[in-house]
Length: 109
Image (cartoon, rainbow, N blue to C red):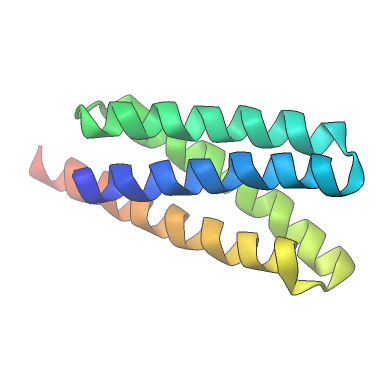
């Protein structure tokens, strides 16, 4: 339970910092708002995942799925590995970790 929460927490911080970097580097308010919003959702989800709340796992899964779609689209559009390609791969990895956690949770019950 703690490994998944830690991974989601680190990913949430990465997303929030990436949004702040997008604002500092190019003045993009959309990057700042979306990065902080998604980052906050993921960090809060990580806390509740560590507390054993199943709903938090689904929230983290949905948020990560949306982020993966956004970053994959941006990577396909620009073909620049950083940041879109890197974050697409990172979100895919987190997506797999959370999905496997949900699968393990459902098998136990």
